[in-house]
Amino acid sequence: MNLLEKLVERNERRLKKIDENPDPTKLWSNRLGYEIDRDHYRELLEAWQQGKPLLPWFPSAILARAMGALHMQLETFVDQFPEESPRYYQAVRSMGLPENVCDTMVLAVAAVKLGDLPAPSLISLCPRVPCRLWIYYMKILAEYFNVPQFEIDPPHEYSEESIKYLAGQLGELIEFAERNVPGIKYDQDRHLELLEAEGAWFGYANKEWELRKRIPLPVDSRDTFRQPFRRGPDLIDDTAKLLEFWRQRTEEIEERAARGVGREERLRVLWIWGRPVYADPMNVLEPRGVSVPAVVLPPTATFGGKFPISDDGKELGRQFSPLEHEASNWLSQDMLQRPRRGGHGWAEDIIWVCQDLKCDAIVYYQVVGCLHMGSPAKLVADMAERELGVPTLILAGREMEATFLPIPEFESRLAEFIDMVLAQKGRG
Image (cartoon, rainbow, N blue to C red; front, side, top):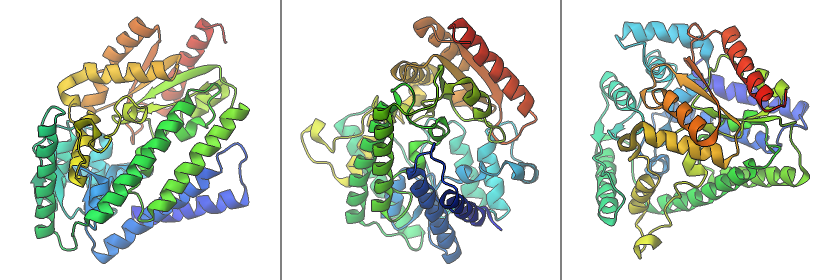
């Protein structure tokens, strides 16, 4: 059974469990979210079986769907199966790939090699993206599986000229894909529909962000570990169903906030980057009354409103074309500028999020092999202490493999830090 089949089956079981034993402490809208996840895995599985085009980490997931293809984030499937990591590491070694880099990326390549995930139909490369490893990961996929490659040459600054230039690059990418990948055909009307849905989705995500500022946190901290982009408007073909989930979710959180519903909150912790998928930090945090209002990844400050999405050309006094809209979103969200901003840019975003969500402490999960988010951990800790008086725990480990940071050590170090902060604040 491949990973997509397992994920469909897992979500079917989860839905059955919710129906038979609903948990009143959890958001009821979670049920629709898991149904959407199941639909997503099923749609990808059927596309794989039918030979339809699949595009991992395409520059825009919305654009991929408008082209009649499906976007894939391969590592987000692999990281749900830590028990498979020994087998995947063996495949990584047989391919001659380095083991001392971000494990979810190289293990995703291994999963494709072993037939547990589908091979890509086309690879598009954007050299100036936040993740330094990403470009090599994508090249490995392209060259190992012998699929067409297209490299985007993005500009550095946000300007009308840059928007036009990047939109032109996206147009060339569409033409390249239509020539080289059977089944790809760009549909501008569908693209416009999806861009409109994206605007509505961002509106819901921004509204939820504002609600996360409430004390106590009106949403289960386990839910904050799921990033908004994991359920973006491109995820399934039924866009209306996905937006209905976001409407239900934000209204439910808003209603809980109005009633003051939430767990006891003695401390607010901002979690940075990923977490060890083989361990559950809430086993330590929840009994101590600790809430986690956000988990910081590259797009997090965007969902908080620090980098608003494009207003469709109004700032330049004219209407954008769909591809210009895509280009404007890329540039205005600062996703292409982050490498130039360096570690200080990452640190500034984290400090902004920490202050905006009124967090008392930071846990920085320093993923081994992650150069862009792992390296600035000490810089972030120093800035948080100096500018906000907020202490930081740095935990170095992998996402999938436990020998670097075993569960007992992970839990004991996390518990010691939380207990120390609680004592310092007189909340012990």
